[in-house]
Structures are given as structure tokens and as C-alpha cells.
Image (cartoon, rainbow, N blue to C red; front, top):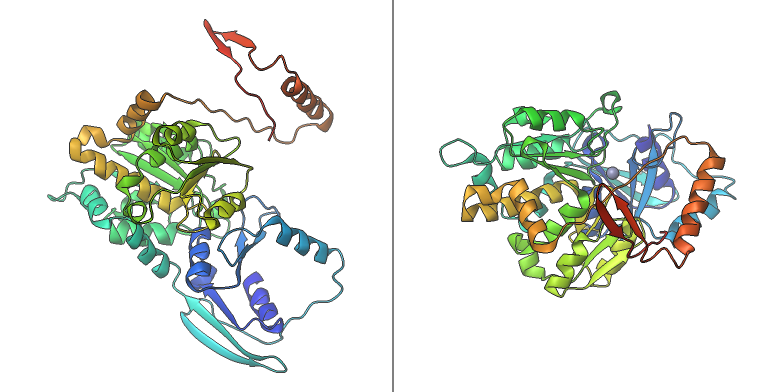
Length: 414
Ligand code: ZN
């Protein structure tokens, strides 16, 4: 219903061409790539993540600009200002497009001109791009093994989100993952009644199958495929902050970076400083930015950033202008395939992570989400915290727990 209205409104607003995914399905990273590849002026994304809108608060609309990334604040603010004074809108009546059928439909809109809608395969373009960035042959060799016995057994859960068709095409068809290890890969409008969030709480089914099963690697994606969670054997958890640092330390395992070089790293402010340690050791520039992928996009467009991530399970690079869940999985599999060359025990998720900690030290990260709280006590807590941050005596102060003493190095409010 929303897609039909948006297409009809595009026609009435002199947009000449609309690309739409078959069945209305594209992942967010795929949209970012398509905007860039086809030099579109922007993209409209309908996703459930983060933006409760629509009649049942399960619907969000996002606008990405011509660089493929989330619109900058100047654009979203201008859109908001427009909503405060809108008095009419234009829509073309009687324009129908079958979005389940691949192909191009051409229309002539009276008083406006030609209008074209192209229904595209959801995965084709994205898949060929991933093949340019990664060495599919070495990942496939690891996942399938020469004797038909996989050297690395993986399980993937798409949580009934948009990633189902990407998992099936990229991981099953191209890289040899058995379909039986591609879980919840049927995209459902209500995500099967669950919450498609790739974390230990909402992806508990994946955690359980790794704990119980023989799998060496597991991953889950969120509803629109931009976020990811990485787990190792027996559900060894990789925090998103550590995932970023490990990838940063091993970019030479990914053909794309051997071509482009490593321009810089970045993390959002609340993400742990694990990547900073890698940057310091490699003498590569590292940035701290506010939360929101658009801030990474600025640095990428300026040619200063190759790899970045957020503690909220987002990882990505300058190959597009969004975080990219499948990209993160392929990055980890590339690193594992590379490290296995020194012996299979070197290529496990846990071995890679522990080696990283012993080389760089370990940053512990924690995040607390408080939901549906009463305002007054919550505000009191926040003002207490702010007072503590503002107090010059906080830095250098020592706190002890369980026989260990910790000293505050820095406290700030993002
Ligand atoms: Zn998302």
C-alpha cells in the first residue's frame, strides 16, 4: 500500500524514474549501493527499525541522499519544516505497477511527461558487488571443504527480516552453505511476531543452536539487514566494539582494502576504544563521531575513512554509505579463511579474538537500556551523572570492586 502510494506520488512530482526491489524488498545496504551505482538522486526506505511510525507503530520511512547514506540533518530538518506547513500534495490516480514482476513499466503522465518504474531483482547487483570486494573462492573452500565436509560449519539466522533472500543467494548458492543452516530466511511482514534485533536477547535462538550444536560460526541480522551479530563456537560472543577492532587489524584479508588502501578508522562515541588501539599501533587516523551513520558518511565522502562501527551492532566500510550486515559476515569469514592457513586452530572466532586481546589489550564495554521509566527519577539519575562528569575530581578517582581497583581516565556525555 505504501509503495503504491509512493510510486504514484513520485510520478506526480516529476520524478522520471523509480527503481524498486521485487516484492518491495531490498536490504538497506543494497539500497545504499544501488543509489550510488545508478547515480540516483536519493532513496526512500521503508523499515521498521528505530522509527516507530504508522498505525501500529511498526513502520518507519527514511530518506537517503545521493551519496547513498542517511540524509544529513540539514535535509531532515527541511523535511520536518515542510511537514509543519503542508497544505496539499500531488498524487497520480490510476497508476498501477506489479512489483512482484521483474521488468520496466513505462507511463506518460499528462502535463508532466515520461515516467518509468523498474522492478529489480533484490539481490543481483548487491551480490556482484560483494564478489568484487571479497574473495568468494577462499570463503567457499572453507565453508564446503574439498571432501564435501565443511572445514568451517556456520549457521545464519535472518530473524524473518529482509535478509532471507540475501542469505540464500550469497551464502547458500554462492558459498555453499546448506539451506538447513539458513534459519528464518523467509521474510515475513510482521517478522513472525518477533523482534528482529541481532543481540543476545532477541537472537536467543541462534545463541542456543550454537551452544548446543557443532557450529563454528553464527550470525544474525536485523530486519533491514544493516546490523549484525557475530558468534563463535559454543556461542562465543564478539561484542560489536571488538568486531570492529578485529576487522580493523585484519583488513589485508579483504581484497577491497588491498586495492583502496586504509584511509582511516572511526567509531561512534559510546563504542569502546578497542579500535583506537589498533589505529595507534598501525599509525592510522581514527575518529570518534556522534551516534548516527551519517557522521561516518561525511568522513568517507572526504576520503578519510575506510572502516567504522557502532556498539549497537553496526559495522561497515566505505564500500557504501550504510552499515552492512552481510559485509560484516563476509569480512569475518575472510579473516577466518586467511588465519586457517597457519592451521585450523588459528582460524576459529575465539582464537582470533583471544589473540587480538593478548596483542592489544581488552576493552570492556557495557550498555544499559532503561525502557518505560518514570521521567522524574530518570531525570534525577541523569543530572547526578552529569554532575559527576562535570566534577573535576572525577577523573583520577579510584573505585574498587571484587578486589580490583579502577581509575577513571575520562568521563563524558555524548
Ligand atoms: Zn537496521
